[in-house]
Length: 127
Image (tube, rainbow, N blue to C red; front, side, top):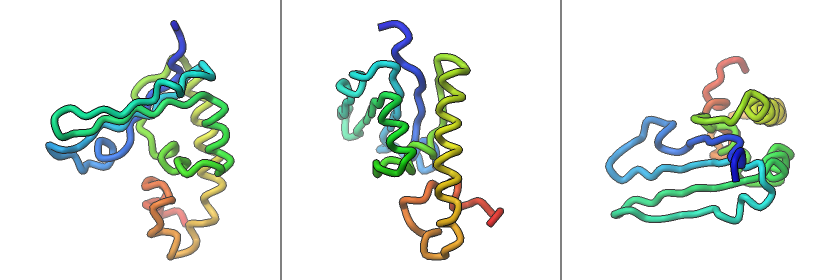
């Protein structure tokens, strides 16, 4: 369906500079279609897995409310495609809301080592 893909982001080794010959490609795809998640896929080429996780906007908004364990993945994305500025802005507003909710956790040294805290926030020296 035209215009179904709102935004594509990558995460994992391709965004953390840990790329090697067995690195997988993790895709986070936001759809303008509530049934888009149904084509989420994982496949193997050689010995390398490739993951494509598809979400609709309602699922992304749920993540931003911290009701989904993938919330840290969603804010650590490197955006590689967006349909238009409206979709990009919508995602960035949700990312900013998550950042604000996580900010108070960064005051705790224990939380700085938690895998649930996005990489880009753990390295933030403003706190």
